[in-house]
Amino acid sequence: MDKRPYIAAAIYVVVFVVLLATLPITLPIMVVVDLIRGSRRFAGVRLLIYAIAVLNYEMAGLFMAGVAWLRFRGGERTTDEYADDNFRIQTWFGGKLFWWAKRAFSWTVEVQNADVLRQGPYVLMPRHVSMGDTIMWPALVSQRYGTNVHYVVKDELMYDPTLGIVGQRGRHVFVKRHGADTERQIARVAELAEGLGPMDAVLIYPEGTRHTAAKRARIIEKLEASGEGARAAEARAMQHVLPPRLGGPLALLTRAKDVDVILAPHVGYEGAAKLSDAWYGSVIGRRIAVGFKRIPASEIPRDPEGAAQWLREQWTWMDAWVDGQLR
Image (tube, rainbow, N blue to C red; front, side):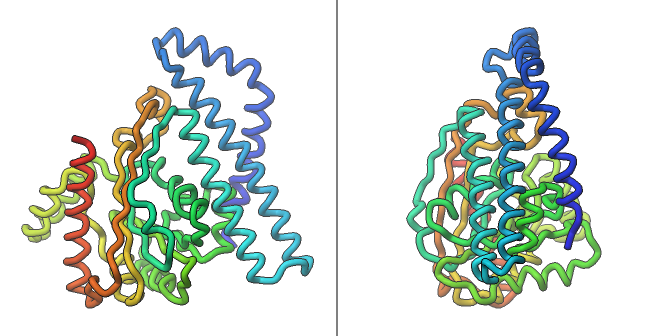
């Protein structure tokens, strides 16, 4: 059991109590600060309101996670029922964070071709550009269709109390992106492909990190330095996505041979990757457009070389989709 989410939970509780107790003071101060700095859309006030909402749902999520554990330990729930309870908590929590972000920052959300999500199993491969795009999938996939999504996400999310505690109870992989035990982590990702039913999906971000111009430049530089000129040219041609990493995605593609893949490009989070972007108001009034493209299992090469080439081709398509939406 990883103790980090429990340590984080204690800190979150203190912050929540302090923030709630001082709200009659901090809210008017934030209004004045926004007026002084000319933030006509009250970016600071919106951020404060969203922070309180997030902490509120963290407290509720911790409470529900505790109740679920007590019922399971007390013999009221079977192992399968316990797994269902934690799936519902995870879905509820992520969905609330997304819909509150939509309200607090006045987002318009457009979803295209969502019907392909109705039937599992599938591997969901989204574009990754912001912290904001990570909270879409519980709302758009699990809440809408009841799909139990098994996530491959960064290890740092263990510092989120609710996600860390509930996530350890489900079939998810928290990847240490800079760790030395790469092979073991890839093997754990591959295991997610086993036993997937019609209400299951696996989500993995093939890019491995959020797209930024600086990261794109570093990747191109490394490819050129290692003599991979063709791949460097391929990465340079893609303006809005990073070239996909092959470890985890190939482990799933070569293992889940009867499972479809759904690509999930989106636009609207560009330039909204950090907390400071919310403070300065660049996240307000965003149009978030999400599209889905489902590729049948029969059309996906399963040998490592063929799967790698196929994945790079799909990422070229995703870059073109994003470019078209932005234009």
